[in-house]
Length: 154
Image (cartoon, rainbow, N blue to C red; front, top):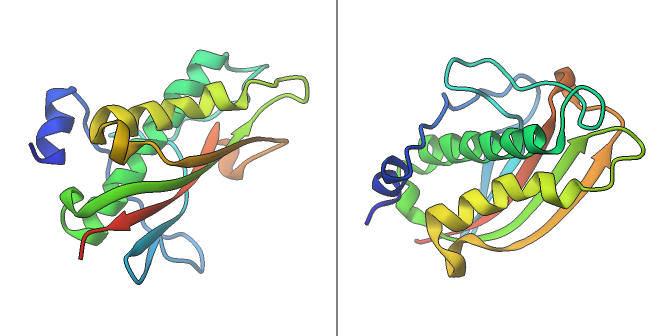
């Protein structure tokens, strides 16, 4: 089954692929690896999920923001690779959570993205290495920012 069909089966819709708003590329290919710049949680209408986990948002809202960020990364990969079926493996995710200084459940928030990829690609392909850290702020007040490394079929 194609990844696009799997997304449809799961009832998931990709937001518009974001354009660079600075001096960077949303994704870069090096050999058979595609590295994505930090992505933020874009909704299908182009709005962003904002707010600080631990004060403005709870852990579950952070999880949903990470899931939406994962969909935003997939939108970039679909645009830049031409087809999500070119993804051979999720290699690494680096997730940043805007949170209060006493919030310590960063991995539970970034699970929103990790579990999405597991569900879309399967356990073997969709689960890679990962880091999840807290930040005192993130650009534009977004709740999470995630970057990834993906192995690509030639």
